[in-house]
Image 1 (spheres, rainbow, N blue to C red):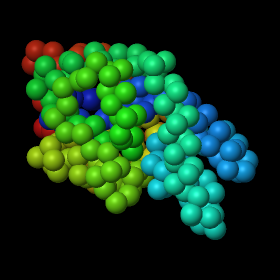
Image 2 (cartoon, rainbow, N blue to C red):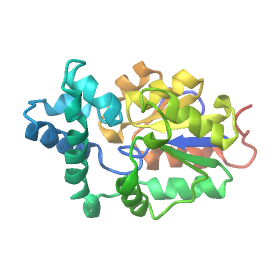
Image 3 (cartoon, rainbow, N blue to C red):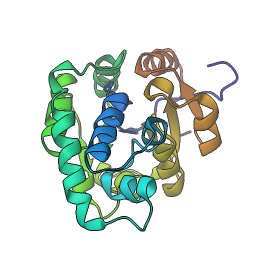
Length: 232
């Protein structure tokens, strides 16, 4: 997008999954809405959409408050997972996602996935992405707290063997951007998950692009002959 600082190809990229590489943000919104409804909670979809990107450990207290009956959390998660799984075969990659991952891999960029999604959902989404070559995969099962806690991003960077300033974090929510900022990494916000450029920039995103395809086009351009690698 015009007016952004110059972007250079980083040594490593930490990708979010849902809403960043696969078009699932609104599916998660619907699945959570139905799960809460089945449990007797009336939660506006707009509130749920703004909470997608958090893991269940963060989403439920964020949406329902600290006074909720925590004994029902597990049932809510199971209901969401069952409902979301009915969409597995209809999920599509977001524009340019597979191309972006492939291009970065062939450029020698260390690639990590840091996602609150795990288990069979993760396997299904990796299938949608044609099982990309990833150096590191970290899920909420590997950390104590999911996004916006920085734990996922921090662990991914550690396993990549890189420093935060050598890594770019790519996500579609303010939670991704906040996690990146907390560990000292720069971030790209993608609008394809339904969060606006203004919101992503306000959260601290250095760059904002429409979707993976737009980001890939920019990286291909700056990787041309004579261009400087990042970090300087």
